[in-house]
Length: 388
Image (tube, rainbow, N blue to C red):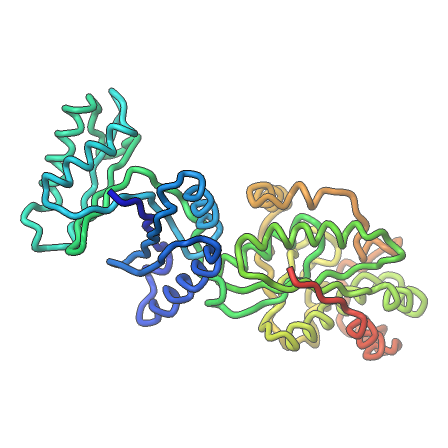
């Protein structure tokens, strides 16, 4: 028997006439992710098959499976074995595999898919015969509802596949099928989770981080780079932009009403974000905002920050509470980096009181008293780009 890895789609399988577009993008992403390995990837019988001699090496095979668990578009995958032959060969190989994984009293089920309709034995009969053979040889017990182990058999014209090892993928849509977006990412808990969610919907994510260095330490910049590198496991290489906000902040502090300070900071971030997004081919912005989590995230204040923008703003976490977001960050693996001490750009020059339900006209009036375009242009001119 020759080892292979069988990839099963989730949401992709529901696509209609444009399914091939999603499948081809998934193949491209898989080939990119596995380019260091001597494997062959092809589509076969409604699924993707990975072949290669190095799959016989347990260490190398595990490395490949670890990578597959970070590729969006893969629902589940199986370490399987392929061979040629008739029913007797199927039963013999099923027993050989079962003896490695099934002990006495283990509950199991056999599931067969007969792609080759010319095969003389039905799927149900293969299930029954192989199941009986396993019971006799391994003293295991059949459980078709909640088995501890499932033996998968696929019968095709070019060979047969059997598997007992099933692994969960991350699901979602392949990166690049939903365009490119720009994440306004802090080194906090929320925005990395929001970025991950947009990746899962097939968007390639670029990152923009605002900082107030040297008035604050470089901690937020260092933390956010670690976070982006962690998220990089899920998409091809991307770009992280660092935008210095401190000069703009100082001007707002001296010349704008204190209660609008945070809103003006945020309006600047969104407008700069839109400029960078358009320059680099992104079609939307992402934020980690959650409704009313902080003063700047009330409906009224979100309306203020949105006003004047023409690009869509995606807020994947808008209806989630903090504990839900923290739980997801822990599952994602970004939480431990996000809770490291740092000063973000909005913590600098914080006002004593913040307008929680600001009126758009009032904030725009304050903005017009500032050399707004010049301030934004100065920030954009000093943005640093880092490939990660």
